[in-house]
Image (cartoon, rainbow, N blue to C red; front, side, top):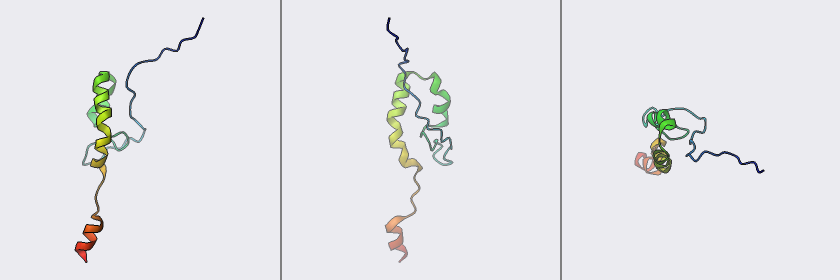
Length: 77
C-alpha cells in the first residue's frame, strides 16, 4: 500500500505577509492585490485567481513614486 498525499489543485495566495495598503494605489504593498481581491480570494474560482496572479507583475509600477530623477535635477540647474 502506498501513501498518497492529497493535494488541492488550486492557485495559491500571493500573500507574503506584508499587509499594508498603499494610500493612493489602494493595493497591498506586499502582494499587490486590491482589498476586494484579498477579501474574495477564498471564494474565487481558479480561473479568477490565475487571472489576478497574471496581472500582479504589471501592478508593481503603480506603487513606485518618482522623485524626479536626472531630468528634475537638470531642470533645477
